[in-house]
View: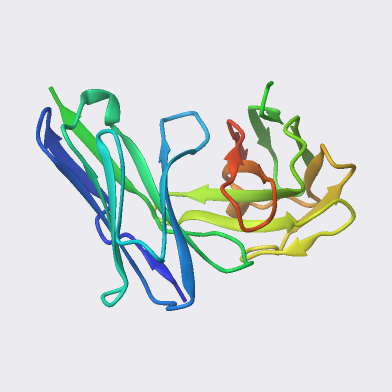
Amino acid sequence: DQQVKQNSPSLSVQEGRISILNCDYTNSMFDYFLWYKKYPAEGPTFLISISSIKDKNEDGRFTVFLNKSAKHLSLHIVPSQPGDSAVYFCSTRASGSRLTFGEGTQLTVNP
Amino acid sequence: NAGVTQTPKFQVLKTGQSMTLQCAQDMNHNSMYWYRQDPGMGLRLIYYSASEGTTDKGEVPNGYNVSRLNKREFSLRLESAAPSQTSVYFCASSVISANEQFFGPGTRLTVL
């Protein structure tokens, strides 16, 4: 039972344009959502998070949007840079429980 | 601070061999985790330790054992390696079990 799904295994974007990565979840008890970024041969690193009491959180070029009614989370990167090329994992948790991760989306930003 | 460290970085085993993956963190975190990452499968939790002295099964525990040696160290053991255990293994830690996790650099394991 995959509770967190990232339906796009890959995404290719031109430098300077917007990258939009999507994530869907099934458990309405999830109350905290995180995005991790992973470069090859490295461990994932935390990027940005959002609580279920908000619908948007912004940090520089990165913005996460949460649509609770649709159980949908998205990460916007504007403007995209070649250094943003990495695998992005969506993760969620219900209060007091462990994180659950999606399958990941490989983002490639072309110069 | 080194953060989360893992040894070894790479390992090749033959089917049936055993080995232990080591993990240590210097952030005084209470909770530690072992994940495996396979293509198209994301990060799947093998075992975790919410606090020193406790361990619990995650999503894919079969074929693995763990030891929370102390607050800093959490090891993962494969008693009899199988080709299905070929994967990249990540250790992670967090202040408490529901918080943001910090990951190690990973161990790439191949079982022939």
